[in-house]
Every structure is written in C-alpha cells, then in structure tokens.
Amino acid sequence: MAAIEITGVSKRFGSVQAVSDLSFEVDSGRVTGFLGPNGAGKSTTLRMLLGLVHADGGTATFGGRRYADLDHPSAEVGAVLEDASFHPGRSGRNHLRILAAAGGHPASRVEEVLELVGLTTAAGRRVSGYSMGMRQRLGIAAALLGDPEVLILDEPANGLDPPGIRWMRDMLRSEAGRGRAVLVSSHLLSEVSQSVDDIVVISHGELRARGPLDQVLGQAKGGGTRVRAEDREALAAALEAAGIEFSSGEGGALIAGGTSPEAVGAAANQGNVALSELVSVGRSLEDVFFELTAGEKE
Amino acid sequence: MKPLLLAELIKLRTTRTFYALAGVAVGLSLLVTVLTASIGDTTQEDVLNDVFRNDASTLFILILAIVGISGEWRHRTITSSLLAAPDRIRFLAAKTLAFAAAGALLSVAISISIAIVAYAILGARDQPTPPLGDVIELLGRNVGVAALLGALGVGIGSLLRNQPVAIVGILIMVFVVDSLLGQFAPGVEVFSPTGALPNAIQGIDPSNIGMDKVDFLAVVPALGVMLLWIGALYGAGAALLISRDVE
Image 1 (cartoon, each protein chain N blue to C red):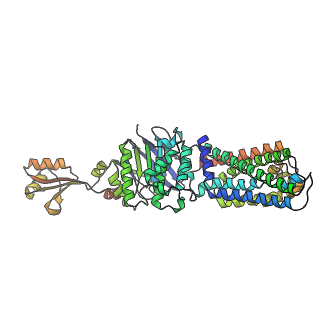
Image 2 (cartoon, rainbow over the protein chains, first blue to last red):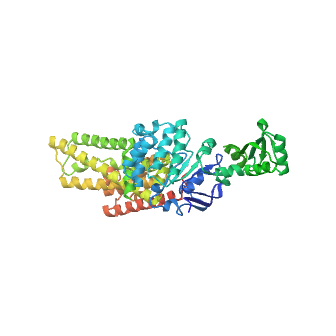
C-alpha cells in the first residue's frame, strides 16, 4: 500500500473548480515533487490530504486512513504548509513546545529538532523577528517533531538562502533514504529536478503527468538521442535506412528525436557505423513543465 | 485530551497578552480595594460588598478567551493547531477547559490578593472585617464565575473569527446592552450570560449594580442557565469549526 493515496479528489470554491478528480500515489522511500503553476490546486490538494479543507469528493489517505483517523497524526505525518504561520509574540522554542505537548512528544524532542534545523541559538527569540528562511526552518522543525514516516512540504525552499536550499535538498534525500515518503510541492523546478525521484504535475486542478522523473521527461515531446560518428554521412544513411528521423545538432552531431539510444545504436550497428557519441537527450524539467501546463505562468 | 489541554495552557502562558490583561485585572482589582478600604467608614453588614467584592477577573478572562480562540484565525495558527489536533471538537473542548482553568486561577489570585490587602487596611483602621467563612464563600463564587466566563468566551470567539469585532461586540454587550436590558427589558436581562447570570451566581444584590428592576435567579438556576448558554455556544462553535475549510 502506498504511503499516500489520493483518489479522485475534487474541490470547488464557489465558481472555481480548484481540484478536479485528482488521483496519484506517493511511495515510501521516495521524494515526490508536486508541481503546478500558481493556482493549479497544489495547496488545496495538500490541505485536503491533511483534513484542513473538506473535499467535495474522493479520498485522500495515509496507509488507507484519513489524517483525522490516524492514532498519532503528528507522529505519522509531518507537514509544512506554504503559509505556515506562527504567533508573532511567541518564541520559536515555545511554538515547538506547544506542538510537542499537543502531539504527546517528549519536551526533549524540541531541542533535538531545533538543533537539526540550525535554530538553537535563535530559539528564544520571538518569531516576529525571524527571517522568512528562519520561519521555514521552524516550520520544518515542527514537521519533524514526531519523527514521522511521511513528510509533506509545501514550497519548503521559499525564503531559504543557497546553503539553506542545499540543506533542504540533503534533508529530503536523507529522509527518503531512511524509508520516509516525502511529498514536496515547489515552483523551483531546478531544485525539484535535483531532489525528486517522482513527479506529479497538475494544472487547473487536473493531473497532467505523474511517474518517475526520468520517465516523465523521456515521454515528453522533444526528447531523443544525440549521436555522433567520424563518418557522418554513413551515420545519416544508417538512420535513414532504419526509418529514424533526425536533425543536425551542434558540432556535427545528429539528433534523433523521440528515439531511444538503443534504437539509434542498433541502426548504426546495422549500417556498420562506428559511433563516437551516443547520448540520451531528455528535455529539461522546465521545458516539460511548460509543455504539460500549456505554457501557464508558474 | 490531556496533551491538548497542556498545549492550550502553554499557549496561554507564552503570550504577552495574557500577562498584560491579567496584570491589569489584578492591578485594577487591588486599586479599587485599596481605595474602598482606605476611604470612609463601613459597617459589619456592608463590608463584604463594599470592600471585598472587587474581583475584576470576570471581564478580563472573557476578553482573554475571545482573544485566545479568535487569535488562532488572526495569526493563522489554526493550521498548526488542527494539524496537531485534527479532531476539532476535542481541540475546542481543550481550549474551553484551558480558559475555564485560567479564569479560575486568575480569580483565585485576585480574590486572595484582595482579601489580604483588605484585611490589612481595615485592620489597621480599626474597621469591621467580614468573617473568613464569608470571604471564602465569595472567593468560591468568584472563581466559579470566572471559570464559566472563560468557557463562555471561547464559545463566543469560536463563532466570531474577526477578533476586533468580537472584542468590541462583547464590550458593547457588557457595558451597553446589559444596562439597557436591565432598564427596559428586565425579564430578558435576567437570562443574560454577561450580566445578570454571573452577578446572580456571585450573590450580588441587583440594586448595588443599578439593576433594581431585574429579579436575579437563585444561584442554582442561574448556574444551570449559564451552563446551557456555554453548551449552546460550544455546540454552535464546534459545528461551525467542523464545517469550515482552513485555507
């Protein structure tokens, strides 16, 4: 059973259909990127998953159970939502003490997660004096309080500086490496491409693509194989003979669009052409994202 | 429920608003006590009413409770609160109990402070003092009313998400509406949870607070009606909280 199962969830706010019949799964031990332009329905989906927003239809469960039905919610699921808010007059440490008490976690865990996110020295200060990056770290500390098996992070890199983003990336990979299921929504596509195993792309509340990152990139239009040989004409003839369409690339290379390296290699072998380069050239996540979301702005 | 109650009590203790309002309540109560005990003479019959009945905790705990629940929406901490406690009925119950307990504690502190100061000043001035048993009974009534108003405030705040509107509304209710009802609709005022009912439970004489026309209920019926109010507001607040989307 998948760690997170979203099946046919829908949500309408007035005249706006925010999410429509959305289904996907998130497996343990993997980082899943949840992508979509602003207003695509990502946050609404995450809030439905966490029981904060009532779905009009469908189910969103963790191991088959709704968030509200979990025995110890904060010990099973940790969440950082985009607008994670804190009482401005309360210190970071006290914010965590409250959540630790409510979740039944030991008070010692507060210091552990503060250390983990690098906020120990600032923990006694009021949150109103925190930078956006510090608030993000505090939100992540709150999510980690119960050492949960599932992590949900909505735009976690917002406000983080480059070292913070790197820390975030390493943290996500580390948590997945420990067998946790990690679902992370982000608009920082370059970050996502370096951090995730799987992606789910939505637009206008509807699913546009899902699956392992490589697979989604490979399936997208425009992917292909870059191939090069000393005898360029012989290579071109071999590709033509195999019915493979190609175009000229940089430096004398040929680009076989929509064709795998295996097929190109086989065609070259058939034509007795010695290759000097044979590389899969997928499109960037950004290209694929804009294609899947029909060019909507993020 | 115990972890949620503990969390709510930590919330109360970790904001300046609580200490500021509690400090004002204690200061105001003691100031009035010092003045009434120091100025003029009193009699054995009137000393309890004149000097010892200055516990101002009730209004302040009512406001604190409204601030406590509506602040969850204002500061958007409702999200993290409901992630930690997805059962919204239990969340609201924990908050209700926490503010009832806070009201009781605040009232105990104020009532004991008033008693110490009043006995000291009256004793020094050779003025009559009430029997300790009467003062303890008064303390019990004050504590009970403060606890009830703490719970009532959570119920009111759970229905009104807009904090300023909720606070201004309750002040208008206490200082304007209750007075008007006392004058022009005493039969209605007798059931007011912010006016006649708490005063009846505290054993206050209607004529001492300008409500001569209001025939206060006896303590037990007043307590029963007050609990009905709290139950109704809690039920309505819980229903609203359950139906709301936390966006």
